[in-house]
View 1 (cartoon, rainbow, N blue to C red):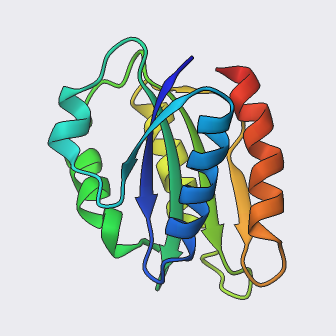
View 2 (cartoon, one colour; view 1 turned 90 degrees about the vertical axis):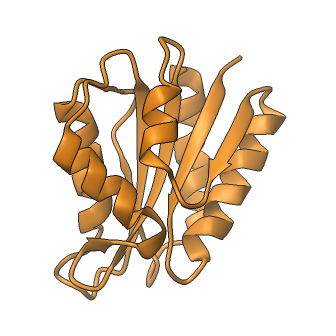
Length: 149
């Protein structure tokens, strides 16, 4: 079973709640989880190993920016551009489709991890908070994510 680091970018707390639900589902499937409500770049990069798995739950804020809790991590990732070869990951992007920057931070996270050499386990999920049932949509996606581990 995998040990999964869950990185959370949230402003209002909705994405944190969603990440907690996903952690419960992963644990019920026999995996261990480590929550990062304010991801620390140095700690996460130093802890990378061939078995590392990140699940990034990323809410967009304002003009498509990363939510405050993950802003520093994202800026350092863009600045330092570390090699992420060997890292496996998945991304859940959370946004509201009434904005033209819908899920921009999550899309950026997905693209940046891939550019840096990480392996995308499955296509990222986009959740529209104005139309989707986040629990149902993410739970279904997570089943496929778990199978890809």
